Image (cartoon, rainbow, N blue to C red; front, top):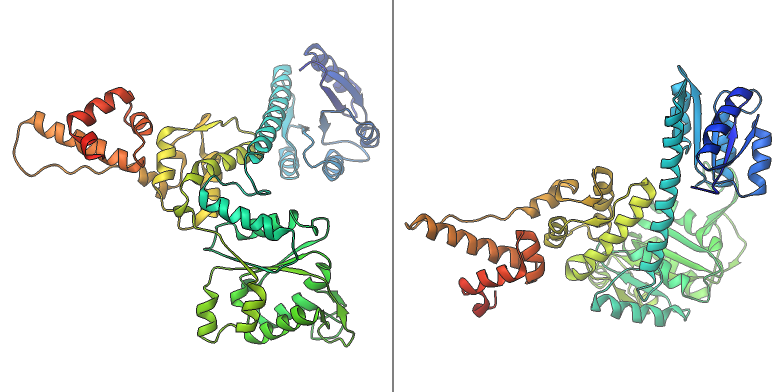
Amino acid sequence: MAGEKILIVDDEQGMRRLLDRVLSREGYETIAVAGGDEALRELGTGGVDLALVDIQMPGMTGLELLERIKAFDPAFPTIMITAYGTVESAVKALRAGAYDYITKPFETDEIKLTVAKAFERERLLAENRYLHEELAQRYRFTGVISESARMQEVFDMASSVAASNANVLITGESGTGKELMARSIHSSSPRKDKPFVVLNCAALSEGVLESELFGHEKGAFTGALGTRKGRFELAHEGTLFIDEVGEMSLNAQVKLLRVIQEHEFERVGGTRTIRTDVRIVAATNKNLEDEVRAGRFREDLYYRLNVVNLHVPPLRERREDIESLARHFLMKFAAEMGKPISDLSPRAHSCLLAYDWPGNVRELQNAMERAVVMARGAVITPRDLPQGLQDQDEICLKVPERGGSLTELLEDLERQLIVQTLRREQGSQTRAAEVLGTKRTTLRYKMEKYGLLERGE
């Protein structure tokens, strides 16, 4: 707390003195000004860590000052002060990026607590950024997180091709991270300081797609009110990422092939030939060989794009990545939301591992964002996860139809429970013991009792 500098902005001298006195006693360094222009000058000198801003001020209002602050530094923590009855303005301030607001009249303890929480949030954000950077350094390819052997093979190939100008075709199911892989190739290439431009073919009609690729001249079609550069021009000397290339029409494929072969094009409605130097990385969730055989994709274009093929396996085929990805997203969203969440409970971890993730990494990211939103404590539990994942926490036991004593029935159910838990935890006795709430030595004793060690279950 000591040494942190707070800027107080309020046109009332009495309020400035009160806030200065309260915060100075808490060990903060304070500076008080009467208006927005003075505040901006102080912020421009640097060294200010937080601002307390009155919303209702003559000249530049608090909301206008907040807008100027956020334009300068979107992450700068700002607390708004508003009079009773103008809470609507405070809500607008929150939407504009303010950390919190305080309503006059207020208790001094409220000011102290709100400021302390704001600085605690900044500390957590800084820690999470550091942990995120440390975590990212553990992996072998720029920006892509994985511990699986299959992905390491993809990384090796991607690292090798990144240094070249060869076109790359990235294949894989939706949500596996094909665009992230494309960005990583670009950022590891000699073109890394040039533009990385994205075009999603699935989101555009044929006419719009051509204009997006090559640009258009003024008056080329209805609504073309001015000249516009296309993605090839914007990506000059950089990388053009063409997503869902399998959705491109045959007519558009012909025009794309010509640009790849000739390194030149004309804007729609234009006659001037424009030279281009662009590396193409394309992606698709379709089997383009099947599309070629079906006559929906040109064979010559396929071979032009598929100089190097990188296949990103689905998440269900690299389950060893689930935990590291989940923790990455947990730290990311906890930092963004300012929530002190640090871990997954063993049962939540089991739910993640037991699920097949049809939406792949994108679905896992959404699930962890939802979990951070819903979490009430420092640890993610199954109830914080989406319903479909909570269902993975259930283990169904079959009550034997044969007769027997109560002791025999309970032992049979206990054996089933151990077997299903071990299967769900992929044979890990340590994790199975955690889920069952017992010691590993006790679990091994039970396994030996029921003959599970001998059978290798």
